Image: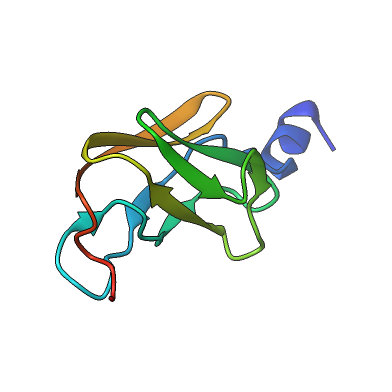
Amino acid sequence: MTAAALMLAAPTASASITGFDVMPGPMPGFGTGCTYTVIAHAGPGEYLSFYDSQDGLFDPAGAVQVGASGEVRARWTPSTPGRHNLHAAQIGSEKTLRIEVAAGVGCPF
């Protein structure tokens, strides 16, 4: 094989997040203390992290490996009302969502 053929045959690494979304809860809006599923799409086997610019927690925390489907899910629980900037990040790529959170709205009681 020539060098050009080897380059064409080599797999390319996808170092970008291609999608990021938050699934709504059972009621309209997003509320403090409620837990929501976040979903990001990236290359299988890559690692990405979720974080909230305000006071919110992700489970699992830290870097999460993307599964074979190209999708990774985590649970997000905002702790304070107001605007939250949620981030899905990996080296060289980041997606941001802006979410308004109310006090306790969106939780089943």
